Image 1 (cartoon, rainbow over the protein chains, first blue to last red):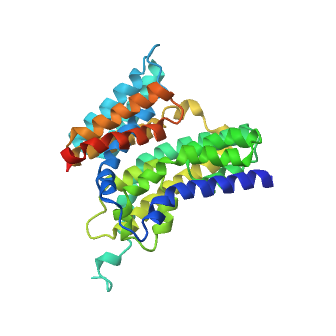
Image 2 (image 1 turned 135 degrees about the vertical axis):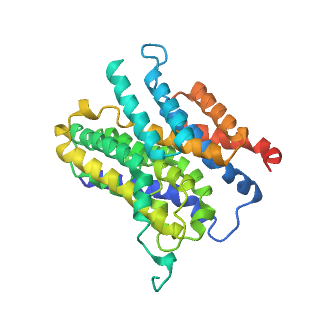
Image 3 (image 1 turned 90 degrees about the vertical axis):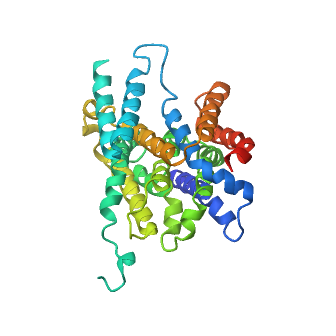
Amino acid sequence: MTGYIAAIVVMGLVTLFCRATPFLFFLRRRPPAILDFVQRYIPPMIMTILVLNSFKTLRLDRAPFGLPEICSALVVAALQLWRRNALISIVGGTGLYMLLIRFF
Amino acid sequence: MHPHGPETRGHGILGPAFTASVPVLLGYSTIGIAFGLLVVKAGLPWFLAPLMSLVIYAGAAQFMAIGLLAAGTDILQIAVLTLVINARHMVYGLSLLDRFAACRRFKAYLVYALTDETYGLLTTVEPPAGSKPESFYAAISALDEGYWFAGSTLGAVVGGLVPTALTRGLDFALTALFVVLLVEQIRSIRRIEPYAVAGAATVLAFVLFGPANLLVIAILLAIAGILPFRRRLA
């Protein structure tokens, strides 16, 4: 039991270290100009990667060829572009996905 | 008018924060329940699920931990694997330096609670007008963590009772959330380069290394890949 808890505490500390590193490192110094440039484009790049990462386990080589995921994601994007209401987009797309995987 | 002015009022924040966090509620509660259920199924004591959700609070690492703990993996190896899987969070912080610079009271908490989904919300959703951004960020972070904690506890205690046939597919809400956040990013940053570079980086990382550790490898490739566009994007 103490082995489990020790492992969990170590994992928590490592995770916190990862999250806190940039803040601690730049606590007193200004980030270099190159980082100033990079950090502006990190959010759009991360969102692109997180979306693609969600699809990494899709099997495109056999039915239903990832179609429920891809169609639902496109519907989410279309709803968001149209109504610009995150709740409608997400609930609509998730609802569609839950229907599609039950029928295909 | 409130004696301290509208800036210090707490109410008016929770509503918008809750609305913004509903997608995470859908995703975290269902995935949290699945996590709690797996902890018990692996033969681990149930309370390790809420403990991990509180102490680690990182989904992917927690799922990985179930197998490692059950197999009695060496603690040093666990530490290294956690570092690899969570190294992406170092990059998240870089783009939040300015946003968190004005934060005082909750800064430590915000840093601790910085998951993928919370990061996405904090970098995309605008705090309501007249509110303190820090309080809004803290409310979103705390709600998200609450969903995850409640879900994993529920899963560990009564997970077997939840009919998975009913909730199957609800975790797509997190994918949908990332799609929404991407659309909003495209609205505010109307340049093709970051999206093209990140897309190419992810495909390249997948082709070269496969699905394992895709996130961290893709992020590193994307950062390296955006550098040549520095002059064009200036």
